[in-house]
Image (cartoon, rainbow, N blue to C red):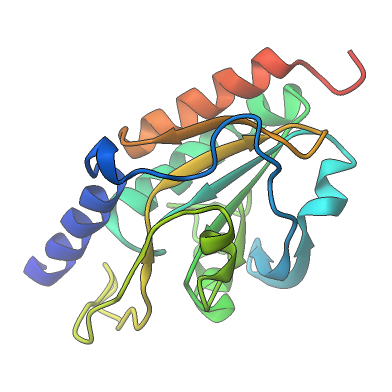
Length: 196
């Protein structure tokens, strides 16, 4: 339990680091396109940001690791608000350095993604780095809330709202996991539905 709490605290710290360290893509920047293995509702699939942007804005949220405190709360909050994101014409995708196998479980877990939040595996951190999201090395003995070894590095908690034009409309960091969700929803609602 103590180890799980330590990992939860580490994840929260990654999401609330000092502003001086934050150098992710700013609004107006072109959002790098990516295709990667992903999971939704316990099933593995291939995700393409380019394909999703044809449908409307996309919320791309980076987080440290599945099955860790703040990350679990963030996924749950996105799942609870997913209807509101869809009503605003947007889709949501989480990105972490977790393996796709871990994300298959996470995406289906009723306490977290609940089959509503699509999760992308950025196993080598290349997607995070392309968005200028900080990636820190993992610890060999780090375990998740289930007691399983994490075995990967951590992306800093950062959320981007990408407009249908492929440009970053909003960049969110250094707030609580739940505030990432609330601020992202407010940003997509300002964009309005595609074609409106």
